[in-house]
Image (tube, rainbow, N blue to C red; front, side):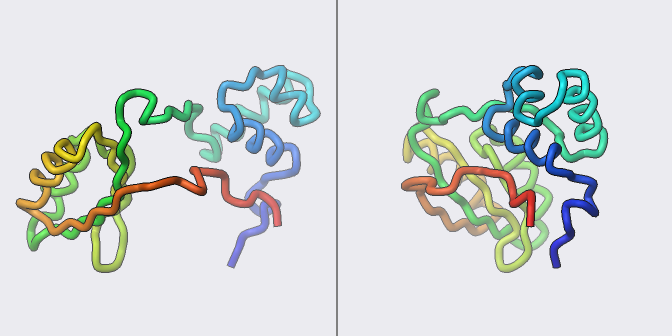
Amino acid sequence: MSVPNAALGLDEIDQRMLEALARNARISLKELAEAAGLSSPSAAERLRRLEERGIISAFTVDIAPEAIGYPLQAIVRIRPLPGQLHVVERIIQDTPEFIECDKVTGDDCFIGRLVVRSMGELDGILDRITERAETNTSMIKATPVKRRLPPLSR
């Protein structure tokens, strides 16, 4: 069951602001105000309220891993051995090549995204985990849908 945006307190102006920020998190306040049809002070106030309500939690950049020396990406499904859940979680958290990881339900406990420079580097990372968990790895060929906003209007 979906919750209408009105119930969340998102109006059309908020939606326009979120869409503009999703396209470019570094947009100037003046440009953001223009996109939302507001004055700069009004846009600043709305932005502050979106942050206070937890709708916006960060302003970020999108870095292409291959451009900084990480040509390979993999999705790793991880199923810790009995009694190893917290140890495996700590290994994942302490491995900077894991750029994203979710704790999930189902057969696996974690699904992580790794960036690596080589297959050898991937093997080294997985070796540290496979002492304490079963893994299943898939190499990423392409990303047809990049991280994006969920639908803001219904």
